[in-house]
Image 1: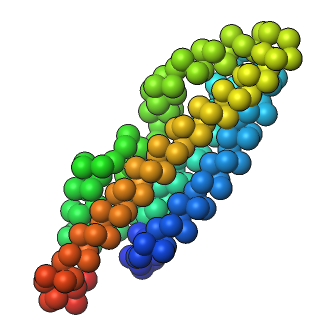
Image 2 (image 1 turned 180 degrees about the vertical axis):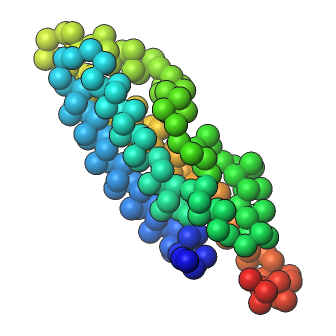
Length: 175
């Protein structure tokens, strides 16, 4: 069984390292999304975006220690802190199983960009370039939002644990 220290960032430095890794993963996926959007096949880019996000979002959750399985393995008092932080700050994907429907609902939230992307694909050259830029931007937007949500939850958990350690030293030893 994996130790809890591996599941959640244990310091602000760890949290920053996780954010950097996730942003790097996101950039690679956004470039892939933009690359596919250049191909003028109807629906291919949306299907690709959904597939990329179905892989990316759970991996971001895993990096932050916020998959449903990782949260479930936490000690009860830590689990409560994590769920309180998710309710207070979390986004739609934290601590949840990511489904096709959940991804589609999120993509609809950036629907104007996606509609423009679809329409622009049929303009010669400039339209395909615009489609790629919009695709990259939409993927980045969804990913950056999720990374930000995860980072806020993890920072809240870290802050609450520091507060508990400072004001309840016995509680720190029990962990």
